[in-house]
Length: 432
Image (cartoon, rainbow, N blue to C red):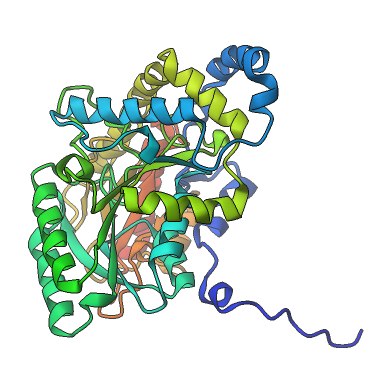
């Protein structure tokens, strides 16, 4: 055959890169004996089959033609109202309230990932700066590359992003004349992917004031995009277990976006997310969304509105919290059993969500192609190399001695066995 020229892919397409986790998931699917602590998938056994089955006939009976027709771009009004009530209850449980906003500022999207991409599309030009945590949610920080954005990262501790480090970075950018390029701070604040760490309530107003201060110096609003995908999945149901959002402290709502999803607290198959937006961003987001899909799945929105209205959503979340609490406890207990006393090894202790962050001694290499990853595969366990989770900050070099452990698809016994296998792999490569 004659040589065929390649397709002239766009600059944005060429700037992107394949998601590294895809290969790891494929390996696990190909060999059922492998324990996957890599995929951030939700627990199969808790997917709400019965709830969906119970609500579906009524939806088709009452709203059949409307539910199967196109909807409006911003979302089904009944679902917008239920979402706003849900967000209000979450803030009230944390001792705060939402002010100067309402259901009209809720935009329903095809998963929260769509909202995150639209925000990047409407806010970022090539060379603009996005402030992130170090580490952060790698799927989005890698996607930012296709927009030509430059991530600049801020260290975390066990309480989340460190405000003093954030201010130091913004001061550095201001001194270098780069502050006008800063458009967004992207923060996963609840049970963070990848570390499992939750940003404590006390730091949020401090961070908000820092962002407001440097917004004034930049000459435009820097928006805090709070990715709260795991917000509902706090293990404890005690009041105050889940901190208020940034929006609760941003009384006028001018600097903050809440991005949430039904994928983690309900089911990924409904592929529905949402955002509570500053009023000035509602129009631009809806314009960009309308050009993509004319609105998210109307049938799924009717389902979710029904599930939320009668309390089945809240009841399902309670069951999920118990399931993930057992899994998370199993991972932490296994780490304590198998890695306790190993010099230089530490791990996070999440209070919710689906992830534990494991740090091996300085000098260890857990990355792709490493002896440790090969040893783990030999032991029939896989993980996400932590190096993937660090944004491509031009001023920093990602460490290679960290691991993201995800326990969403494993039962507690499998999760514990996966940790034991990791310990066996470490013994092989460390020479213990």
